[in-house]
Length: 452
Image 1 (spheres, rainbow, N blue to C red):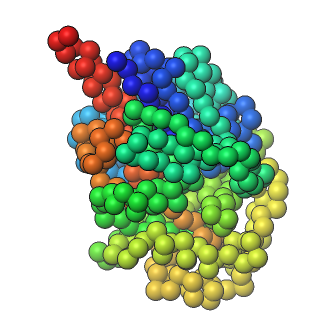
Image 2: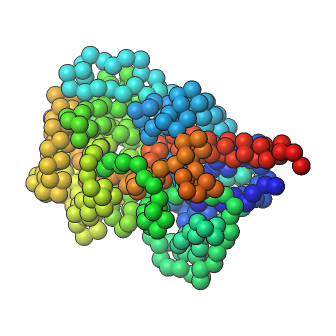
Image 3: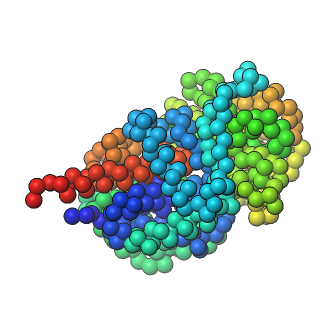
């Protein structure tokens, strides 16, 4: 007998899990997807955190083809060969719903160029670039398919609690204004599940941490992911972009600290403001629309810090210190803040020097400053750059799962995936969702083939 499946989070992991199940005959009417945001027809274009396809597909839209050094360690769960198959499958699903898959750009760097070797390693991850301006239409097409197959969506719903033992989810209807939760509109109700796929992403970190503490879930070691978003005229990086469009430069000063460029955007590239826990942080968008060309490049400079006690709270406290009257921080020797892709002015506090940055980031500020100085030695941009502070990858503590199916060790009917399992990327999130769907289908087939 087929089970009731509830998916919390309509992001990349959740919708790929549902698609895998539906494509293989699982009854859509037994699948419910809950999300705090809105469907792709109603979702505001500037809302990158909540709603159908989550932050991943409605933000930048880079599908980094499998690399064990990029986007979480997928291969540790299922091995390299199976991981590659899962990523391939995720790419085919993405192409299937893209409004014009011929416009997807592919970059495949072959070897590390000599001119960066004295200062950086270049991670050579082949990447498919979807184009931010295609993401909304792709989301609509994908959403329509799932609805036509009977999947039920519950929008603007806050999950307040989950009773793992009673297999019950406590939810309430909420209202958002400008992306900020306004209030609970109705009293809480409960819904039941047989199997739960938990993929809340960044916006569900508080709930994830609550559940980890409430059920004393087993955990794996976790690192802090924090840094800045850097913006420069593209001309300085053209030589590298020709080799690796979504370049990932890497340094490892010591065993506790490593740095990398992250989520590079070129040509029609805009810095994007995000709000998480009421705090500002910065990311980037890349459009495939000549009318939006600004010949800028932006990328994150992210530090991975190991050995920090209670890393999630440490990150939150640092980000809080970067806030000034509801604004993030901006520094440039020569430039003013850029406007957003929608033409709106960025609401930032402009710094005259990096003293406050050093005060907030403490001993770790110098690693980023040294990284930028090494970038300048290679690319010669001098003072022609900007920093948007902070960029942060809010990640809850990582739960320990059964590697065979991504279910919780003590609750085998509950599966964690996506950002809830530190995926850090569209490809790995998609692959994890497909992996879970595949294993639910395998269990279903085993049950069907049991002697009556």
